[in-house]
Image 1 (cartoon, rainbow, N blue to C red):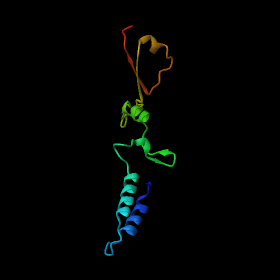
Image 2: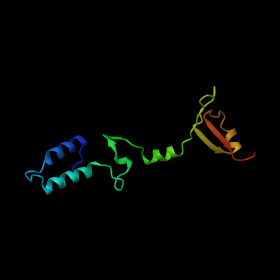
Image 3: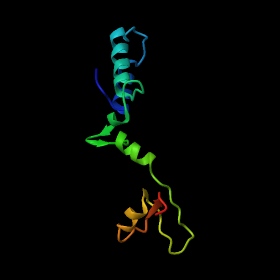
Image 4: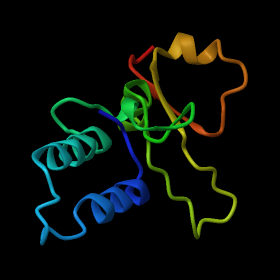
Length: 115
């Protein structure tokens, strides 16, 4: 049917299900509102976070962003005067490190060989 906001759904429910003293609530009314509710909610079985948008803006992280965040390095340099936060970790040989020239102060370099 139709994806609707909570306000519109509430108005539909109030209008279509005001009371049933006169038998005015039909199976079709119930089916329509129930279908709109199902269409308007996030469904864990059918949807992923990429489906939740506001206009063209994704409100949740993409799969690539989730992967990147899972590899993020937490760094807390609070209380240490002059310390740089570590934002990257690199594994490399001594020769590769020597070729860098000017190492980045926010990168932790892990040398993998003894040479």
